[in-house]
Length: 358
View 1 (cartoon, rainbow, N blue to C red):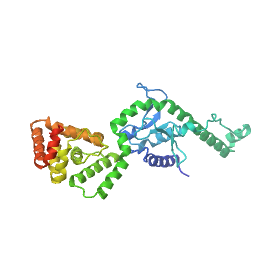
View 2 (view 1 turned 60 degrees about the horizontal axis):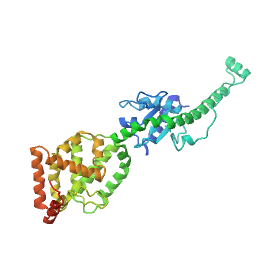
View 3 (view 1 turned 135 degrees about the horizontal axis):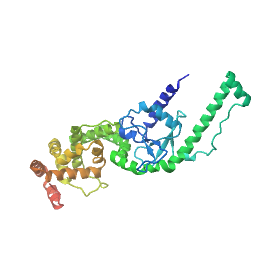
View 4 (view 1 turned 180 degrees about the vertical axis):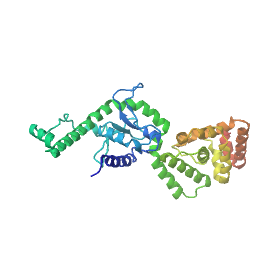
Protein backbone atom coordinates (compact mmCIF):
# COMPACT_ATOMS: atom_id res chain seq x y z
CA UNK A 1 0.00 0.00 0.00
CA UNK A 2 1.43 3.38 -1.03
CA UNK A 3 2.17 6.05 1.53
CA UNK A 4 0.56 9.49 1.42
CA UNK A 5 3.80 11.00 0.09
CA UNK A 6 3.97 8.45 -2.71
CA UNK A 7 0.36 9.29 -3.56
CA UNK A 8 1.20 13.01 -3.69
CA UNK A 9 4.31 12.40 -5.81
CA UNK A 10 2.32 10.35 -8.32
CA UNK A 11 -0.36 13.05 -8.47
CA UNK A 12 2.25 15.76 -9.03
CA UNK A 13 3.89 13.90 -11.91
CA UNK A 14 0.49 13.33 -13.51
CA UNK A 15 -0.51 16.96 -12.92
CA UNK A 16 2.62 18.31 -14.64
CA UNK A 17 2.05 16.02 -17.61
CA UNK A 18 -1.51 17.25 -18.05
CA UNK A 19 -0.77 20.98 -17.78
CA UNK A 20 2.23 20.69 -20.11
CA UNK A 21 -0.16 20.15 -23.03
CA UNK A 22 -2.18 22.85 -24.87
CA UNK A 23 -4.12 24.93 -24.03
CA UNK A 24 -1.94 25.33 -20.90
CA UNK A 25 1.53 24.54 -22.34
CA UNK A 26 2.97 24.94 -18.85
CA UNK A 27 6.74 24.82 -18.25
CA UNK A 28 7.56 24.26 -14.54
CA UNK A 29 10.91 26.08 -14.73
CA UNK A 30 9.50 29.29 -16.22
CA UNK A 31 8.77 32.04 -13.64
CA UNK A 32 6.03 33.50 -15.87
CA UNK A 33 4.29 30.12 -16.08
CA UNK A 34 4.36 29.74 -12.31
CA UNK A 35 2.44 33.01 -12.29
CA UNK A 36 -0.45 31.32 -14.14
CA UNK A 37 -0.85 28.76 -11.34
CA UNK A 38 -2.96 30.45 -8.65
CA UNK A 39 -4.70 29.77 -5.36
CA UNK A 40 -7.89 31.35 -4.06
CA UNK A 41 -7.57 33.91 -1.30
CA UNK A 42 -10.07 34.34 1.50
CA UNK A 43 -9.69 38.13 1.38
CA UNK A 44 -8.81 40.45 -1.54
CA UNK A 45 -5.31 41.94 -1.68
CA UNK A 46 -4.64 45.66 -1.68
CA UNK A 47 -4.82 45.72 -5.49
CA UNK A 48 -8.28 44.06 -5.32
CA UNK A 49 -7.08 40.77 -6.78
CA UNK A 50 -8.40 37.64 -5.06
CA UNK A 51 -5.78 35.11 -6.15
CA UNK A 52 -2.02 34.68 -5.91
CA UNK A 53 0.55 32.13 -6.94
CA UNK A 54 1.43 29.57 -4.25
CA UNK A 55 4.90 29.33 -5.82
CA UNK A 56 7.39 32.19 -5.99
CA UNK A 57 9.15 32.89 -9.32
CA UNK A 58 12.43 31.52 -7.96
CA UNK A 59 10.94 28.60 -6.02
CA UNK A 60 11.07 25.00 -7.21
CA UNK A 61 7.58 23.81 -8.10
CA UNK A 62 8.43 20.23 -7.12
CA UNK A 63 9.36 21.31 -3.61
CA UNK A 64 5.87 22.81 -3.22
CA UNK A 65 4.04 19.68 -4.40
CA UNK A 66 2.57 18.88 -0.97
CA UNK A 67 1.05 22.35 -0.65
CA UNK A 68 -0.23 22.18 -4.22
CA UNK A 69 -1.85 18.81 -3.52
CA UNK A 70 -3.58 20.15 -0.40
CA UNK A 71 -4.89 23.19 -2.29
CA UNK A 72 -6.12 20.97 -5.12
CA UNK A 73 -7.90 18.65 -2.68
CA UNK A 74 -9.77 21.69 -1.33
CA UNK A 75 -10.73 22.95 -4.78
CA UNK A 76 -8.60 26.08 -4.31
CA UNK A 77 -5.91 25.58 -6.98
CA UNK A 78 -6.38 27.02 -10.49
CA UNK A 79 -4.49 27.57 -13.72
CA UNK A 80 -5.07 30.01 -16.57
CA UNK A 81 -4.68 28.88 -20.16
CA UNK A 82 -1.69 30.24 -22.04
CA UNK A 83 -2.60 33.57 -23.65
CA UNK A 84 -5.98 33.91 -21.93
CA UNK A 85 -7.16 36.27 -19.20
CA UNK A 86 -10.53 34.52 -18.81
CA UNK A 87 -10.14 30.79 -19.48
CA UNK A 88 -9.31 29.26 -16.13
CA UNK A 89 -9.48 25.65 -14.90
CA UNK A 90 -9.74 24.12 -11.46
CA UNK A 91 -7.06 21.60 -10.49
CA UNK A 92 -8.28 18.48 -8.68
CA UNK A 93 -6.60 15.45 -7.14
CA UNK A 94 -8.77 12.88 -8.91
CA UNK A 95 -9.66 11.11 -11.12
CA UNK A 96 -6.13 10.48 -12.38
CA UNK A 97 -7.07 10.66 -16.07
CA UNK A 98 -8.57 14.14 -15.69
CA UNK A 99 -7.29 16.63 -13.12
CA UNK A 100 -8.31 19.86 -14.88
CA UNK A 101 -11.86 21.23 -15.08
CA UNK A 102 -12.79 24.33 -17.04
CA UNK A 103 -14.71 26.73 -14.79
CA UNK A 104 -17.18 28.00 -17.39
CA UNK A 105 -17.87 24.82 -19.33
CA UNK A 106 -17.54 22.12 -16.70
CA UNK A 107 -17.49 23.20 -13.05
CA UNK A 108 -20.52 25.48 -13.06
CA UNK A 109 -22.43 22.88 -15.10
CA UNK A 110 -22.05 20.21 -12.43
CA UNK A 111 -25.29 19.37 -10.57
CA UNK A 112 -25.82 21.13 -7.28
CA UNK A 113 -25.85 18.97 -4.16
CA UNK A 114 -26.52 19.68 -0.46
CA UNK A 115 -23.63 19.92 1.96
CA UNK A 116 -22.73 16.35 3.05
CA UNK A 117 -23.49 15.20 6.57
CA UNK A 118 -20.99 12.91 8.24
CA UNK A 119 -22.35 9.45 9.05
CA UNK A 120 -20.92 7.93 12.24
CA UNK A 121 -21.12 4.63 14.07
CA UNK A 122 -24.18 4.06 16.20
CA UNK A 123 -24.12 4.53 19.97
CA UNK A 124 -23.10 0.98 20.98
CA UNK A 125 -20.66 0.57 18.09
CA UNK A 126 -18.99 3.84 19.10
CA UNK A 127 -18.49 2.58 22.66
CA UNK A 128 -17.13 -0.78 21.49
CA UNK A 129 -14.85 0.97 19.03
CA UNK A 130 -13.51 3.29 21.72
CA UNK A 131 -12.97 0.44 24.23
CA UNK A 132 -11.81 -2.44 22.03
CA UNK A 133 -11.24 -1.04 18.55
CA UNK A 134 -14.22 -2.97 17.23
CA UNK A 135 -15.85 -1.80 13.97
CA UNK A 136 -12.71 0.20 13.12
CA UNK A 137 -12.94 -0.70 9.42
CA UNK A 138 -16.53 0.52 9.31
CA UNK A 139 -15.59 3.76 11.11
CA UNK A 140 -12.76 4.43 8.67
CA UNK A 141 -15.00 3.64 5.71
CA UNK A 142 -17.63 6.12 6.90
CA UNK A 143 -14.97 8.77 7.46
CA UNK A 144 -13.44 8.24 4.01
CA UNK A 145 -16.87 8.40 2.42
CA UNK A 146 -17.57 11.72 4.14
CA UNK A 147 -14.21 13.17 3.13
CA UNK A 148 -14.83 12.14 -0.49
CA UNK A 149 -18.30 13.72 -0.47
CA UNK A 150 -16.91 16.92 1.07
CA UNK A 151 -14.15 17.04 -1.50
CA UNK A 152 -16.68 16.85 -4.34
CA UNK A 153 -18.85 19.46 -2.63
CA UNK A 154 -15.89 21.83 -2.18
CA UNK A 155 -14.80 21.36 -5.78
CA UNK A 156 -18.07 22.74 -7.07
CA UNK A 157 -18.63 25.34 -4.31
CA UNK A 158 -15.15 26.86 -4.58
CA UNK A 159 -15.16 26.54 -8.36
CA UNK A 160 -18.36 28.58 -8.66
CA UNK A 161 -16.96 31.16 -6.24
CA UNK A 162 -13.74 31.39 -8.24
CA UNK A 163 -15.52 31.73 -11.58
CA UNK A 164 -17.83 34.46 -10.33
CA UNK A 165 -15.24 36.53 -8.44
CA UNK A 166 -11.67 35.34 -7.86
CA UNK A 167 -10.70 34.51 -11.44
CA UNK A 168 -12.40 37.65 -12.76
CA UNK A 169 -10.39 39.79 -10.35
CA UNK A 170 -7.24 38.65 -12.20
CA UNK A 171 -8.40 39.79 -15.65
CA UNK A 172 -6.54 43.11 -15.72
CA UNK A 173 -3.33 41.64 -14.33
CA UNK A 174 -3.48 38.70 -16.73
CA UNK A 175 -4.01 41.04 -19.70
CA UNK A 176 -0.84 42.95 -18.83
CA UNK A 177 1.19 39.78 -18.29
CA UNK A 178 -0.03 38.24 -21.56
CA UNK A 179 1.14 41.29 -23.47
CA UNK A 180 4.44 41.55 -21.59
CA UNK A 181 5.35 37.86 -21.96
CA UNK A 182 3.97 37.40 -25.49
CA UNK A 183 1.75 34.52 -24.35
CA UNK A 184 -0.52 34.69 -27.40
CA UNK A 185 2.48 34.43 -29.71
CA UNK A 186 3.76 31.48 -27.69
CA UNK A 187 0.44 29.68 -28.07
CA UNK A 188 0.78 29.86 -31.87
CA UNK A 189 4.41 28.72 -31.99
CA UNK A 190 3.78 24.99 -32.69
CA UNK A 191 1.88 25.88 -35.87
CA UNK A 192 4.48 28.48 -36.85
CA UNK A 193 7.31 25.97 -36.40
CA UNK A 194 5.50 23.46 -38.58
CA UNK A 195 5.19 26.10 -41.30
CA UNK A 196 8.87 27.06 -41.05
CA UNK A 197 9.95 23.41 -41.16
CA UNK A 198 7.84 22.88 -44.26
CA UNK A 199 9.43 25.90 -45.96
CA UNK A 200 12.93 24.70 -45.14
CA UNK A 201 12.32 21.10 -46.19
CA UNK A 202 10.05 21.62 -49.18
CA UNK A 203 10.84 25.14 -50.38
CA UNK A 204 12.28 25.09 -53.89
CA UNK A 205 15.33 27.12 -54.86
CA UNK A 206 15.61 28.96 -51.57
CA UNK A 207 18.11 31.79 -51.69
CA UNK A 208 20.73 31.89 -48.94
CA UNK A 209 19.10 34.79 -47.09
CA UNK A 210 15.69 33.09 -47.23
CA UNK A 211 17.10 29.96 -45.66
CA UNK A 212 18.94 32.05 -43.07
CA UNK A 213 15.70 33.85 -42.15
CA UNK A 214 13.70 30.63 -41.73
CA UNK A 215 16.44 29.01 -39.67
CA UNK A 216 16.83 32.11 -37.50
CA UNK A 217 13.09 32.27 -36.82
CA UNK A 218 12.99 28.54 -36.05
CA UNK A 219 15.80 28.95 -33.53
CA UNK A 220 14.03 31.90 -31.92
CA UNK A 221 10.61 30.25 -31.67
CA UNK A 222 12.01 26.92 -30.45
CA UNK A 223 13.99 28.66 -27.71
CA UNK A 224 11.07 30.88 -26.68
CA UNK A 225 8.60 27.98 -26.58
CA UNK A 226 10.99 25.89 -24.48
CA UNK A 227 11.82 28.78 -22.16
CA UNK A 228 15.51 28.71 -23.08
CA UNK A 229 16.96 32.27 -22.97
CA UNK A 230 18.94 33.52 -25.94
CA UNK A 231 22.12 35.55 -25.62
CA UNK A 232 22.27 39.13 -26.82
CA UNK A 233 24.49 38.05 -29.71
CA UNK A 234 21.96 35.43 -30.75
CA UNK A 235 19.14 37.98 -30.61
CA UNK A 236 21.12 40.42 -32.78
CA UNK A 237 21.84 37.70 -35.34
CA UNK A 238 18.22 36.51 -35.44
CA UNK A 239 16.89 40.06 -35.72
CA UNK A 240 19.30 40.98 -38.53
CA UNK A 241 18.52 37.83 -40.53
CA UNK A 242 14.77 38.38 -40.03
CA UNK A 243 15.04 42.01 -41.19
CA UNK A 244 17.09 41.17 -44.26
CA UNK A 245 14.74 38.31 -45.08
CA UNK A 246 11.73 40.60 -44.85
CA UNK A 247 13.48 43.18 -47.02
CA UNK A 248 13.87 40.60 -49.76
CA UNK A 249 10.41 39.04 -49.55
CA UNK A 250 7.93 39.89 -52.29
CA UNK A 251 4.86 41.30 -50.55
CA UNK A 252 1.50 39.62 -51.07
CA UNK A 253 -1.72 41.49 -51.76
CA UNK A 254 -3.01 40.61 -48.31
CA UNK A 255 -0.14 42.30 -46.50
CA UNK A 256 0.05 45.95 -45.63
CA UNK A 257 1.41 47.84 -48.64
CA UNK A 258 2.18 50.93 -46.63
CA UNK A 259 5.74 49.84 -45.91
CA UNK A 260 7.39 49.25 -49.29
CA UNK A 261 11.11 49.89 -49.21
CA UNK A 262 11.53 47.16 -50.96
CA UNK A 263 11.50 47.57 -54.68
CA UNK A 264 15.24 48.24 -54.74
CA UNK A 265 16.04 46.02 -51.80
CA UNK A 266 14.06 43.13 -53.24
CA UNK A 267 15.88 43.38 -56.55
CA UNK A 268 19.23 43.64 -54.81
CA UNK A 269 18.64 40.55 -52.68
CA UNK A 270 17.09 38.45 -55.45
CA UNK A 271 19.62 39.35 -58.13
CA UNK A 272 22.62 39.41 -55.79
CA UNK A 273 21.86 37.11 -52.83
CA UNK A 274 25.54 37.11 -51.93
CA UNK A 275 25.06 40.72 -50.74
CA UNK A 276 22.77 39.57 -47.92
CA UNK A 277 25.63 38.96 -45.49
CA UNK A 278 27.00 42.45 -46.12
CA UNK A 279 23.56 43.97 -45.53
CA UNK A 280 23.18 41.94 -42.32
CA UNK A 281 26.40 43.48 -41.02
CA UNK A 282 25.03 46.94 -41.76
CA UNK A 283 21.72 46.16 -40.06
CA UNK A 284 23.51 44.80 -36.97
CA UNK A 285 25.21 48.17 -36.52
CA UNK A 286 21.82 49.89 -36.22
CA UNK A 287 21.21 51.40 -32.79
CA UNK A 288 17.66 50.10 -32.98
CA UNK A 289 18.83 46.51 -33.44
CA UNK A 290 21.38 46.82 -30.63
CA UNK A 291 18.81 48.30 -28.25
CA UNK A 292 16.14 45.79 -29.21
CA UNK A 293 18.48 42.90 -28.48
CA UNK A 294 18.91 44.20 -24.92
CA UNK A 295 15.19 43.90 -24.19
CA UNK A 296 14.99 40.14 -24.10
CA UNK A 297 13.38 37.25 -25.92
CA UNK A 298 9.73 38.25 -25.51
CA UNK A 299 10.37 41.60 -27.14
CA UNK A 300 12.31 39.91 -29.96
CA UNK A 301 9.29 37.71 -30.65
CA UNK A 302 6.98 40.73 -30.53
CA UNK A 303 8.85 42.65 -33.22
CA UNK A 304 9.25 39.67 -35.58
CA UNK A 305 6.06 37.70 -34.95
CA UNK A 306 4.09 38.65 -38.07
CA UNK A 307 4.65 40.60 -41.32
CA UNK A 308 3.19 43.86 -39.99
CA UNK A 309 5.40 43.79 -36.89
CA UNK A 310 8.42 42.88 -38.99
CA UNK A 311 7.72 45.68 -41.48
CA UNK A 312 7.73 48.15 -38.60
CA UNK A 313 10.97 46.62 -37.37
CA UNK A 314 12.55 47.01 -40.82
CA UNK A 315 11.46 50.64 -40.90
CA UNK A 316 12.84 51.32 -37.42
CA UNK A 317 16.16 49.67 -38.21
CA UNK A 318 16.67 51.66 -41.40
CA UNK A 319 15.52 54.90 -39.80
CA UNK A 320 17.97 54.46 -36.93
CA UNK A 321 20.78 54.09 -39.47
CA UNK A 322 19.77 57.26 -41.29
CA UNK A 323 19.30 59.27 -38.09
CA UNK A 324 22.14 57.65 -36.15
CA UNK A 325 25.72 58.66 -35.47
CA UNK A 326 28.32 59.29 -38.11
CA UNK A 327 29.20 55.61 -38.40
CA UNK A 328 25.52 54.67 -38.81
CA UNK A 329 25.05 57.29 -41.50
CA UNK A 330 28.06 55.93 -43.38
CA UNK A 331 26.50 52.47 -43.23
CA UNK A 332 23.22 53.87 -44.53
CA UNK A 333 25.04 55.56 -47.40
CA UNK A 334 26.86 52.31 -48.18
CA UNK A 335 23.55 50.46 -48.36
CA UNK A 336 22.16 53.16 -50.61
CA UNK A 337 25.13 52.78 -52.97
CA UNK A 338 24.66 49.01 -53.03
CA UNK A 339 21.07 49.53 -54.11
CA UNK A 340 21.99 52.06 -56.78
CA UNK A 341 24.72 49.99 -58.35
CA UNK A 342 22.87 46.66 -58.40
CA UNK A 343 19.15 47.42 -58.73
CA UNK A 344 17.39 47.73 -62.06
CA UNK A 345 17.16 51.38 -63.22
CA UNK A 346 13.39 51.29 -63.60
CA UNK A 347 12.97 50.08 -60.05
CA UNK A 348 15.24 52.86 -58.79
CA UNK A 349 13.05 55.39 -60.57
CA UNK A 350 9.91 53.73 -59.22
CA UNK A 351 11.27 53.86 -55.68
CA UNK A 352 12.27 57.51 -56.05
CA UNK A 353 8.86 58.41 -57.47
CA UNK A 354 7.13 56.86 -54.47
CA UNK A 355 9.41 58.62 -52.01
CA UNK A 356 11.09 55.42 -50.89
CA UNK A 357 14.76 55.18 -50.27
CA UNK A 358 17.44 55.74 -47.73
